[in-house]
Each structure stands twice: as C-alpha cells, then as structure tokens.
Amino acid sequence: MMLTVWELAILLNLEGRERRGIAGETEIHILMTLILTIWIYLLTQTIWICLLTQTIWIWLLTQTIWICLLTQTLWICLLTQTIWICLLTQTLWICLLTQTIWIWLLTQTIWICLLTQTIWICLLTQTIWIWRISLT
Image 1: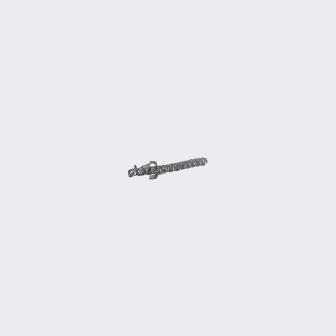
Image 2: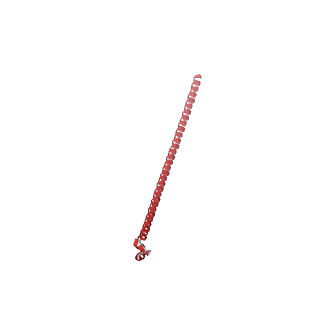
Image 3: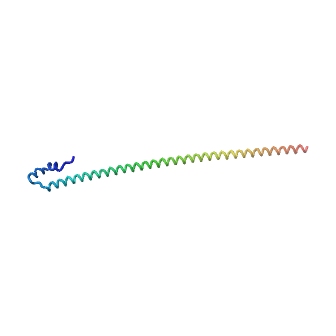
C-alpha cells in the first residue's frame, strides 16, 4: 500500500511543524522527491523482475526447442538404423537366395554331367557289344 504525500507528512509530523512554521516548502519537496524516488525504485524493480521472468521463459522455451530437436534427431537416427538393418537383412536374404540358386545350378550341372557320362558309358557298352557280336 502506497502512502500519499500528506499521509507520509503526518507520519513524519511535518503537519505539526508546518503549523508551527518550522517546516517549509523545502521539506515538502524533499518528501515528494523521496516518494518519487521510491516509486521509481519500485518500478525499476518491477521492470527487472519482468525482464528476468521473460529471460527465464525464453530460456525454458529454448530448452524445450533443443529437447524437441534432440528427440527428433534420435528418432531420425533410429529410423535410419532401422532402414539400414532392413537393407542389410534384405541383402542377406538376396545373398542366401543367390547361393541357393548357384548350388541348384551346380547340382543340375553335376546331374547333367553324370547323365552324360552314363549315356557315354551306355553307348560305349553297346558299341563293345555290337563289335563282339560282329566278330563272332
């Protein structure tokens, strides 16, 4: 609660002095200057508190933004790692499939080779039998 100039003058007993002729205009001016100084001081304190509060809010907002950016960066990192793991897994599956195909082709080649050899052996045997029969 702020006091008016006259309430402060009563408290300082300037009213009684003025009646007695002791207090003059100078004391009233000093008193008004004192009250004005107090008002300016309180206003300055209020402005500093307001600036400090705004600074704290800006700091909190900045921290929130940094935390948000960090969180997004972590999510992007996890997503990227998931994509790389997925690509690696697909590469492994393609590698296994390719190896399976190569093994299958190799097996087919071996079977074809064995079949060819069997056919040649059969032809050779038949030739030998035909040759023996023709000799007798």
